[in-house]
Image 1 (tube, rainbow, N blue to C red):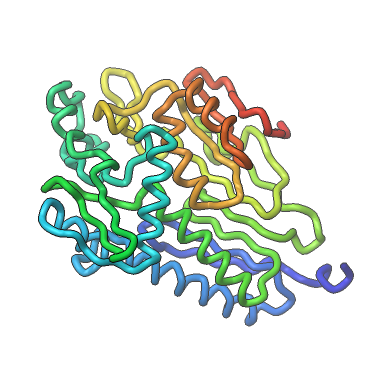
Image 2: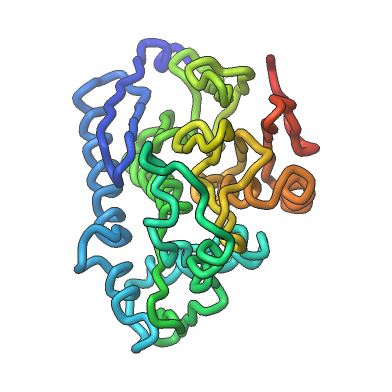
Length: 314
């Protein structure tokens, strides 16, 4: 214990995967800590190159380009991530779906130019191609095939969490025993603070996100929040969030934010949005069925709902 008391927390923040990442390492030597952070950043950049839709050469775009034409062979890592994504789709009955990339960006651009909702027929037509069951995997050949022409996959709902887990694994392998990876609010923490106490994290208030409404003391756990306060549009005095229900093509209503707490940042990231889509009752029912996962929901009236296994400090 005496030895770690002389340690400090060394941090670095930068933009990766289109989001703000921050890496924190507890160490006695700053140069050593920064070197470990360099390695974690390189790991996230490697994952970004695999998964991005902003580069034609990425494996994601190769899969999308061959939709309805032919299967595409991918790295085992990408194949496994897609397979895990499809398992979460099945678990959430399609509320989480990596084929959401098929939705036309013109439908919901969430900027000031948007003044009215699309009509129901247009919205329905836009989500026609969203269907995780049409992603066909062949494990022996490591191929991915999108059955319908025009289908697209994207890792916006799971990629950040996966990258955070990989960055954490990379740093732990290099001897970092205490640290945090914060991927735009998707956190994964391990070990303790320099004084040996657990990390304290705030749960954001959806109306004033700089001010947490509750805090938790955590170690060796991941936390992700999905909220309607990040990206939204106001139409006729009503707030519409950027979280779209893949079945209807319309934004979800009734929930301001969902926070998921579990062992894996990937699972926390992937589960936050579907709980928002499923709604309070179905969302909590699902979380209560799954081992080692907890959930906090703030509804549109600022009422806090929690899964059975949660302990909040106001």
